[in-house]
Amino acid sequence: KPKRTDTIRKTPELLAELMDKEFGQQATDALAQGEKNGQSDAISTLDEQVKAFFVLEEGDEANAGGPSPIPSDGAGERFDATKNPTLPAEVPMDSAEIESLDLNDEEMVVREDDVTDDELKVDAAPATTGAARRSAVLFEKIDVQLALKNMLCDRLRRLVIETGRRTDGRLPETVRPLAMEVGLLPMAHGSALFTRGETQSIATATLGDASAEQKADSVDGTENRKFYLHYTFPPCSVGEVGRVGAPGRRELGHGNLAERALAPAVPSPEAWPYTTRVESLITESCGSSSMASVCGGSLALMHAGVPLKGGNVAGIAMGMLLPEDGEGEPVILSDILGVEDALGTMDFKTAGTRDGISTFQLDIKCEGLSQETMRRALAQAREGRLHILDAMDGVQAQPSEDTAATVPKMLTFLISDGSKGKVIGPGGKTVNGIIDEHGLENVNINDEGVVTVSSMKTASNEAAKAAILELIGEDGSGVKERDPSVPSEDMKVPEAGTVLRGLKVVSVKSFGLFLEVDAEQNLQGLVLMKDLDPGYVRDIEKTFFEGDIVDVKVVGIAAKNGRLMLSRAAIIDEEGAEKHALPDVNGREQPFAGKGGGGGGGGGRGGGG
Image (cartoon, rainbow, N blue to C red):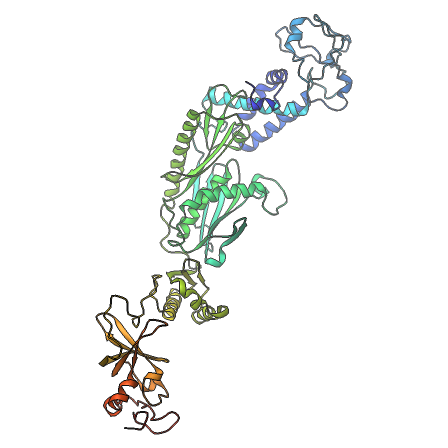
């Protein structure tokens, strides 16, 4: 059955055979150089030589009549037109030699005129065409590039299988040397330097309040993100001079992968009120800088004091070497190098804690992977991840006990749904007044009623919390306290007209008095200003004090707010003002006998006393 990958351009078999014969050993020698720059230079030199030897260029059309024959004497020497100037224009070939050539390959430059079953007439390559030493058969540049990559991949796989070592001398499952430290940037809230081989990341963690949340637009609306990661890959990290501008797709993709790895470990907003931003600056790169960002970002978060769920998070990139045809035993590699990523068949990045994987990303250059191969790769990745976590825990296993002095102090509490408007006030006047009065950085209230107060001083946060809760009459649990003057259905409430004597004043407000009716039931009653006295009370706070004892008559339950309403004026009208006169203490101002009239005394509507 035809495969979907059959439509992909494949290397001409003749080209692969010729290239491996001519440059195979040179490719092995180039890959065997463990030092990154030396290996890169050797592969670049090989690339130039291969192209000069095989690529069909402009001006070679005169030689497009076909290739020169390849000697079949086993000596392995290639025909060179410069050494054979007397070669006849047409050279006969027998059927066996013809069959050895891929005459059906459309990319081969072969003239098919005068072909019989027994011979093929081929034009000789002129000595002045191309380089001084050229292949007898020339190919399209794209085929040469593909064949070179396949040859390097095959040679790399054979090198690992035959020697048991990779190009840098490591075993297939070995992770490169690790080096890391935290706190290298004194002004950052959290910082870490993570180095793995020739890949290095400087990571920082910055903590802020709700105003630092990242706003992301989507089809579902605007999303406020309390945790996000920025990944930067400057050209200097790979020894290049390039333009530095807005992040490209590669940087966005790598940053998104690292963010997905760390996000599950970041505590919920209820447990960690800070907005947390991680930045990863790649200073050196040779394989999997995104996984270095995960490791460095985890250490920076721990150093900043973020209590990561499950401990540190580490990432590792796995690779695989497999022949072009997909046949043979795959070689699984841990912590791949840049050359192993480029030449290998798989780039499998996994990240997580000791408890499990938080994210992964799989790129393959073959039709698919068997379950057994995936099991091997995951098991080997876990061993590598645990090895890295052991090293990270040796540097910062637990979050710092205290955050940096430059981190805003945060305090969160809950308010009921109906209290948000009261805290904010008209046009934000109330909340802005609280911010200014207590020197706060910000006050944020989300849809769930979580209030987050931030400032540089813990005392300021506590004072602001107390002011807000007093304003709305709540305790910070998110449940509005029952108004003591509003009796519940299961309470025993005195009926209207009942006289209650010896009630204590528990609170004096500008609109009236709250009296303690039943201490066991936490039941109070309200006497409004108009019901305080038959006369005129000019200043309630100078006339009544907390702790005063008064007699009242029950009016009933208010229909509007359900409060138990009482009246002192009603009982004075019935029993006279003298019996209910207020003690003349603390400079008390007695009610006036009539509205607008003078004279003290607690007289009733008709006169004094």
